[in-house]
Image (cartoon, rainbow over all chains, first blue to last red; front, side):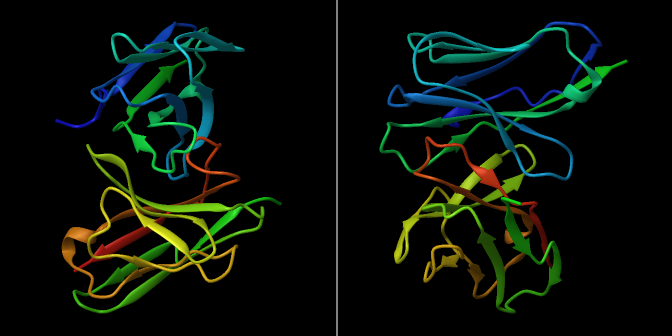
Length: 112
Length: 113
């Protein structure tokens, strides 16, 4: 069993829809959680970062962490075709952690 | 422009022929790392380096070597490549470590025949 599980998709939604992307993890030692976005033929880029349970909002994006359930989510409101990409969750054990563990990524397609 | 560069971007080689993929960053970052990305497996960390002359294994280090002789460069060495190392490779750097924003290079598509 992988430490971090993510539905690979593809997830296809119409423009303007609310998108929910999720990751589950098995190791309760993970403390820091990130979402990266990867466009086709590009390297990933950081989208959101959080280290506590609860919600963190940035524009149309909301990251949610539930440490008790070992479950993190990324919500995208008013999705746009430009949001079409692969979304990867990533986790680190602690603030001295140097190893990142990534989920497999979910491919999202937002259709105009 | 702040960036991470990798060379080559594409490489086709044969089993057993030593190769090096270069990685360089111009952001004065302390931390650099290498990943491979495979369908269904996502990004897996190969090696990382916290500073010059300090390297550590990631999740999948077998068959790879790295060195960090200068702060800006972090080459990935495959001394005897095998077909199971066919993959998309990314180099990344950050200011302080894994919890800091990782800046990724454009990727190197490696095929080992």
